[in-house]
Image (tube, rainbow, N blue to C red; front, side):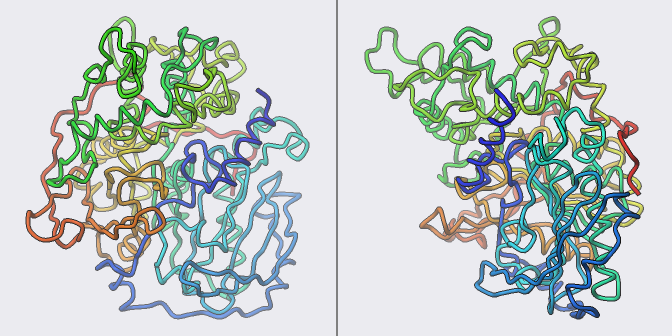
Length: 599
């Protein structure tokens, strides 16, 4: 498969509406988890002491002359600076001065500065997958977690976005960006940082003063980018919101997605066809929900904590000789489902190779990612096919992950799925470059930074167990009390990758008001209300989520669709986190750099 195939896939993803394929994969993870910030207690806090609106001191067109070579180096330039009107989700129109340019060698950016409504806040917006595109900073869809948030809908933020230094087009990028040291560095860590520096310079030029608060918001790879900033550039942002982070980039785009492909293969290698299809994962999902749903006290079809679910796919195996297998699983399908849930194991020790796999309750979201879009009654689908996203993303990322010395394993059929030494031999060289898993955030904490992490339990792309692993590594490294002073983790039942409208759970959650209230008012978040998506559910409902490891629990009285009738429940899972082969990647490490150093 050529790079043009990858590019065409991402183009199809964009036209399909986004985030259901986003992951370490999608082209636009920033559209996810949007919600009603005006309805939370902390939102009213920020509203009580609003920051003054600051008007521009120069015309928008003057920003085209701002020199950015001190940030991006020679060749950095601004292409245009024009006023653009953008409509928010509530119908309001906000006028922005949109500055477009490039920070050398190829970090394209767009920065949107409100013309008449800036409240001294700035937000850098993360990108998803392997990036290569610019999320429109004037569109509220690009500002995650902000559906009815007045701070956003009234145009209070300057927003910025970047393609992270490449387009995926060899002609435009001057060759294969995955093997170019500077473009690799721009994607790994530099792109968002220099764009933020450029935005801050333009803020001063346009308004005559600096921002009072700076934030980062991102999901999937955007989540990795947020954690990378906290680790490498701890003073860039006052607050960071991280969703479903692909912080373990090397593991995610090799062993995790690679195992999804190999688990499916009828032959156990890349010559095989898929064994599990869309119609059968629906059967599987129905059985899982019947066995493990209702943990919160109501029959809502959601698995609150999949770690307490002990469902065995063999329980819905087809009787021997069954003529109709449409509502049961064949032996091959049972074996595949078990492999997907269980993940790969080291052949010698039986140790898990991954921190986690797709979780119970996420099956309906596997379609198109772990399994083909088609049904088992249709023509067989080769596992080495762009129609299986897990194959596509690994094929697009392997040159980033494996240095030339490991070129022999640039084939997902040759990864060390059952060999724990694969981490040290093949994944460790670029781990300090692309990964953002260092649990030492002491500099970020010392600078007064605040961090909110969240993850949907039904994520089909990135296992929430990796985010739990990172949060627990933070606690182990820095101490639970210290972490509680600046970080929170929320896990949302039934929500898919980055919280798309396809989620069965309550995918609308306001974290913008939570992070601004924490940073600006000192009000630490606790219960956060989540909502059903009005575009995907005829039923309007709400439910709180609580900082990990607490879970929501129905009080037993009143309408369970009303979040007011819920309370904080004790953790359902109390066992120690499992040992796994890559745990050393979640220990403090010194990051490495490529190309030119960022300012």
